[in-house]
Image 1 (spheres, rainbow, N blue to C red):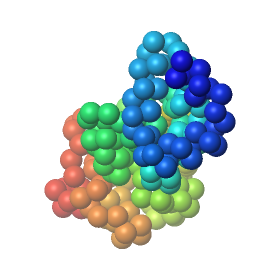
Image 2: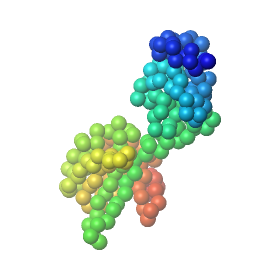
Image 3: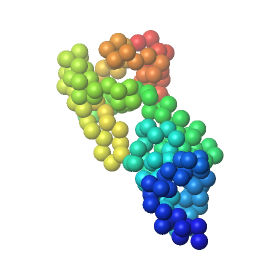
Length: 189
């Protein structure tokens, strides 16, 4: 009966009531249980979930219920919050990797600059000028990360250039050496 009554309340009224009573966490748990059971409730609707989120910032309506398996707005039960923090920390790392093609041609791939709010197109152009080679921004497809591809092996000089040009600490820059991620600060770059 409660679900039927909640469905009759408008989304704005429900959002105001949830915010006033501070019940957003309890209703989120109820909505999760209802989703497992295959039921839809008024709490499943995006506007109330977005309006009731205490932070109000980042997620917006796009981070509402049913966001591809993730907890809405970074809020989660149990250990969900800690896993989100680990994912954010991992995304704030620049990874430099050298790929070989045709046995002797190299391509240096830079990933993770967008985590530091770097303009990727401008960075690709700067890398091309610095190393006097071709450099291009490759947009990620299928959920993959955007990356910059630089023609040639620039892995030795690139960490120092990124650190000086974009004010990123060497401890946040990693170079893949023999399949292992090594901090650039340990390489003596």
